[in-house]
Amino acid sequence: MAGKDSIGGWKDNAMVFQKLKACSSLKQFLGAVWTQIMDSVGIYNATCPIPMGFYKLSGLDTAVFASANFSKKYFYGSYKFRFSFTKNNEVYGCFVIVVELRRPWETD
Image (cartoon, rainbow, N blue to C red; front, side, top):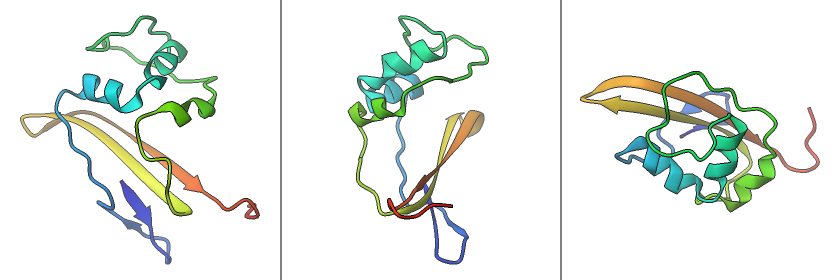
């Protein structure tokens, strides 16, 4: 995970989490949210490994992440999560999620 610094640049490796067995690790990381996310992309009764294909996540209520098995307390600011899947130092897939946490009075 990278954090955005005060002058607008990304500070890489603010938090690093490495795990073997990507699918089962993601399933454990998401906890109870796993089933709802998999259902949202059209993979019902999902097991590991996830079948190859293109999946689009839409219509998911973000409130479900309150049940996930990851930290819920962060400082306000911007964070960039990069997930990559490697085997023998070769990248097979990745995705990036940028999250911006704002104070309730900040609007723009």
